[in-house]
Image 1 (cartoon, one colour):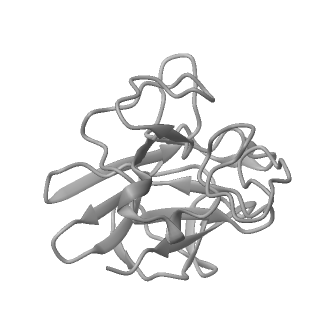
Image 2 (cartoon, rainbow, N blue to C red):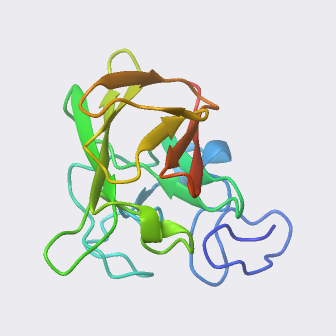
Length: 178
């Protein structure tokens, strides 16, 4: 299986990339495959304080194997969404700058130049397992399935919805079933 993070072609049957240790398929992992994802979606062994791939700090409030992910439409690259133990988790999505690092950094995607630093916020309700999004007044807009969102208004997302950060970067919401 080809790794969604580093593109390494792994042997059949392995669960984690043999090069970068990223989970090959977050949705087929079992509880015995314990680990934790960094904010950029790289899998790390339990207890890691910093990502072995990108060096980002791994926050204690992240849960193991987040059931929420965004998948980039063209490359298939997976971004695991960090979820806290709180009822509501707010995740800032945007592009890294010298002064600010969003919870989900989209700057590594080739089409990220039109993504604002603080582009949108994802809101995950752990009790209802619902996901909502709110545009933060981004320059080039946020879209759900091609429809532009009004800034500061909250919209419900469904699994399979395509969220576009500007008209150039398209990600699909995936939610692991209970």
